[in-house]
Image (cartoon, rainbow, N blue to C red; front, top):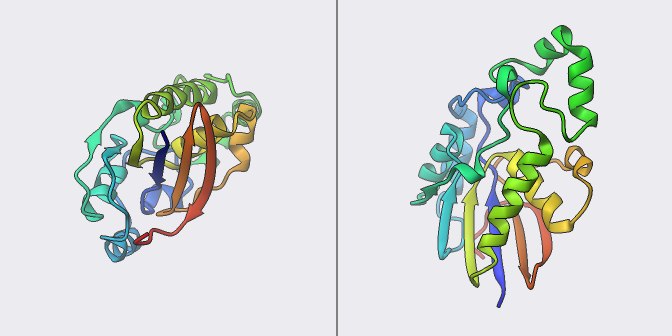
Length: 190
């Protein structure tokens, strides 16, 4: 019984260009053009989910997907850093930023640790693997990273070594608790 999970990262928004901790902002004009061009390019799926962020919901909508929103696939909660740029936070709290980048249990921003994010996503993946078939989810890049970390059973600090470009598909396929990972391909009509 094989389960195939396709994780689609959303089109770019202004927060990514500004290197801003997501503030649930809209897609950029360029992001909208790109996602509209990709509409209809994803294979059919038995179950379709979306992260609750505005950016992911809009990406799913523009791709023509009817998806169920789930909090389990929300991006990492960044607490007091939400909406601020990385430069602003680094200037105001350089030790905290350094710790955040090196300690997967850091919650000094008042949000969620990377380990908590990975555990949450691992729980969702485990539930998805109970049924064979195709699952498609439009999720924030940090959720894609967390899923890859979980699927590969690597240490959480590998999270920072994974790049997830906008509007790419990361595919997990597996059975019996073992996953294979295909990273960052462009949407296509396979």
